Image (cartoon, rainbow, N blue to C red):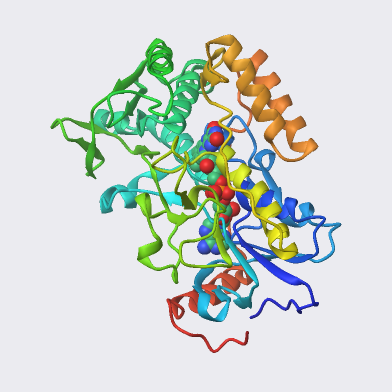
Length: 451
Ligand SMILES: Cc1cc2nc3c(=O)[nH]c(=O)nc-3n(C[C@H](O)[C@H](O)[C@H](O)COP(=O)(O)OP(=O)(O)OC[C@H]3O[C@@H](n4cnc5c(N)ncnc54)[C@H](O)[C@@H]3O)c2cc1C
């Protein structure tokens, strides 16, 4: 297998990852004179802030996903390749991926993070993460299957395990999924399952720190806690999950909760890139970059977004928050800087414009901190919806998300409550096996694949 992309006299920029950062960079290079190659292991861009609504059957996966090929359909010298980066070889200016090698003039790592299970093997094996669209689909299937199964249990302990939902991590994702499931319990389950005693559905939110939404003010944390408690979510602060075995989540205070629905949104760690030396890694194994997003020790390798840790911003000594805005702003600036580099012009250093943050807990319940203003309740919720609608890619996606929101606002109903299991054709399986085989032989070793 190979990339099958010829050199055409233009300098080549290879971007790994079409998330918020990588995509914005690719868009910024639109009018430049580069050959741009975007490499992503998926063939679509996803919009993580609304992933929890996929998991709770509020939205369709296609409403928050956008195919890369559609984005690049009318562009010359833009190429997309669905492939997974496995290693970089800076001395030869090329990378190894699951479909072969490709050389570059500029390489940009924008491949984000993965869920951090903090080396807890049982949790990693059994917990349900919620970082990607397929994982959100897996979570939706699990929750719906648990509800189905619970009404057929003859054993009370088993029934409770199916109805207890334990969410680990009190950041925005944990708060949002807890609120959404609480609304499902209140408005959807009594209609869908008239023979279920919904008072037996317990939702727990476990957080290791002393407050929820640690990235926001104490006032917003307090509001979020009150909103969740008013929705009967049982919040446990200052509590760490230590293990999961025999359908029981164990905690450091000695307590345990029986559950088959363990949702893990407890943190992320940077994706590892083979070929980047350990000396270039910082906190959370993020790749250390200078003020121009250039990876420490390299001239033509850059890292942006969640995977990077930019040094030198006195307001963010531990790096910028792993959120959409830093990634977008770094992608935009890097596009301008790569163009400037080619023209021999001076580069511009990155200055993060903090546009604030927000989290929604349920209908009419959100917290927002924007431009020094702290909002809570209905106005924060309207603002949250407006910001997210504007940010989703594609007019069709905006329309469908808006219609789904209007529908569920008036009907208190989420329409996507199907357990959809995927089946794989033999051809697809064969493609995946071939890629896996290539991958397996790859780790850090030279391949015989032609460059
Ligand atoms: C559930 C959830 C909710 C969130 N909500 C918010 C929110 O409300 N507001 C906010 O500001 N931020 C939110 N975030 C954080 C935000 O999504 C990230 O900060 C942002 O997506 C980071 O952008 P990025 O470009 O660095 O990486 P990502 O957007 O993570 O993109 C990385 C890309 O790299 C690809 N990739 C990964 N590994 C490889 C590989 N080896 N080879 C090829 N491709 C690869 C992936 O497929 C992906 O497309 C949320 C995150 C999650 C998971």
